[in-house]
Length: 130
Length: 146
Image (cartoon, rainbow over all chains, first blue to last red; front, side):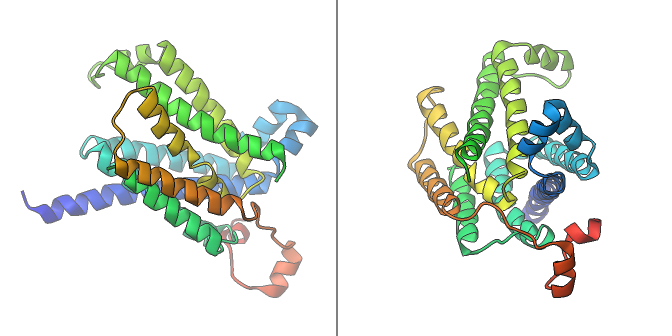
């Protein structure tokens, strides 16, 4: 079997997981930023009020859809490739893509300290595969 | 960051790692499940370890959302990655799995990453919309989605 199509398919599977997981995380974070501190909402409106504020937010709903897509992409990838390859590769790359996406889409202050942390965690998670 | 908020981050970390470990323990004890027999998956949900794992993962999701409401995504994700360290320790001492030197090095890298991020600020303050429009530094999706 030719190695190039297999490699391309593997990259495609990992990319699908990473892109959908990043979109889900960014939408989720954006939703919570829009809603505000849940502790304050819970103190004011109770647990049901806080839950209602979250589940009625459209960005949260869209985030859940993307996280579900990421989960099914992961399941599909695991049926074709090994967990020891897909798991660490997707998880570690998601740390880096989240840092980039959070900087540009959420306007977070991703300074040198946060970049260093993201890269250390990314390398650390990749090493867990060995 | 208050003690209560650090506690929420700790809950995110512990519930995620323990939830995953409980699920692994439960599914190992049940043996391989075939997709041709989906009823076995439903039965798996009611086994004690898997049920406990699901409860912990629900707790993880609730505390993760709470954390995102007071801290940046780029703070929460690395800060709670200590869960991988807990998972490795649980895999070694509880599930008796082999943990290689490379994996311990990975644990060290993650711990250092957590150390870096938790020493910095947890939240990016955004100026009010009126101030932002006059600065126009860079367009954000936050504004585009409004």
